[in-house]
Image (cartoon, rainbow, N blue to C red; front, side, top):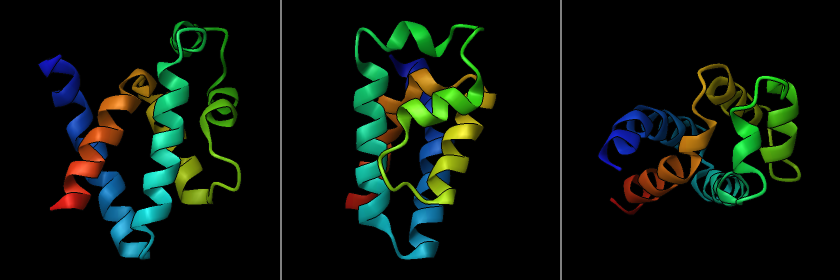
Length: 100
């Protein structure tokens, strides 16, 4: 578990920084929570690392309805770096940063 948190921490900090700069902490909170729930779904989780799932398709699967370009770009970055499975940890760490 600690390895997942270590991998997720820089992404959570990046998401928090973007959300703070855009003045949209709540919107990013909602988007990350949705993406984390989908990524943790037992039927979805095995798909996220599958080579036949294109990054763009993964973004569509995980993006909350009405996601802005920044949120979609963030998901695309996670997909490109093979970090979609860390979305639950990223969302949790994001909420910790937000609470501070």
